[in-house]
Each structure stands twice: as structure tokens, then as C-alpha cells.
Length: 129
Image (cartoon, rainbow, N blue to C red; front, side):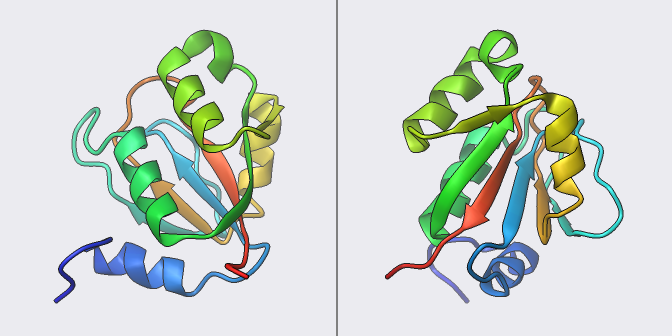
């Protein structure tokens, strides 16, 4: 059994299968998830687990070379904006509708229990060298 890192076997395995340039969406409980991507649904109750906890845990395990979020997050969710810009100084902002469309291209969607709006990010996997 793992002593640290991501303990959820479904999430740990899904992350291990990702490669360079693959897309991963970490989303709130309300983002519509299209057919296609693998989904690891961690949502338990409203707010549990939080977007911040899940994103931080994933970033501890995954090499990321870019991130995209909805521009609406700036006004609607200052906490998520601060979290995202803290992790990704070059964060790309697009419309929420475009983010939902790009979700179809993701290999993996990780759904959190986050109940605050626009707590969604699309991550592009990098390489550690």
C-alpha cells in the first residue's frame, strides 16, 4: 500500500497512463462531462473534496507544461483564480463554453466535489526532463 501521494487507485492508475501533451481536466461538481474521456469521480458531498485539494495533489504527481481555465473564474471565484494563477503564471483564459468544448479532447477528467463556480482547469501534461 502507498504511504503518500495519491491513494485512490483509479486516479493513481489513470495519471500513470498519461503521456506528453495529454490533456487532463480537474473540474467542479457541475461541469458537464462529455462522452470520451476517462472519468475519475471523487465527488462525495458539496465541497468534498475541494478543487484546491485535488488540484494540489495532482500537481504533486504530474508534470504539467500548460493550463487553461475559463475567463469567468476571475470575477465569479477569486479563490480559484488565486490558486490557478499561483500555480500557473502563464495561465491561458478562454470562455467557459470553449473550455467545455475542449474537455472533449481530454484523456482524463477528475471530478471534485467543489461547489463554487468555474473551479475548472485543463492541464497539458509535460515531461520531467
